[in-house]
Length: 164
Image (cartoon, rainbow, N blue to C red; front, side, top):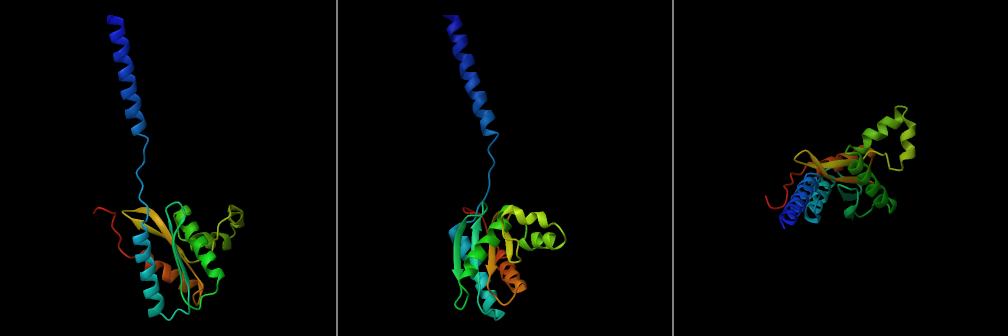
């Protein structure tokens, strides 16, 4: 009888230790919400209008590079939407501006081309509390620099985690 109690206690203790151990392996991450993505795009559109951008497709992706929100301004060529999504995806998954990777390729690191991302200027990570929660990508404005400037304007809008 006493052996059964000891075995039951040891079994219970093992389950508790496994639960504690598995809980220690969980990482908490933040990601952008649809509401926040719309605010980021609105800020980029505001910048575009203030700086006479002739158009632009503006995409926001989550921290895994998946599309959350896309807006294409009037007058923007159709392919700009796809390019904006890819720029945002690159910025989110590499956790760096897409221009940094474009500069690496232009500086002689052509092997990056084989990675399968779009290494063009205009993708910027979106940060909250130092953590990449998503990214914005812009394509189809007057220049690559204006694409990036619009993206920077959108990414700079202050966002707070839900519940704060």
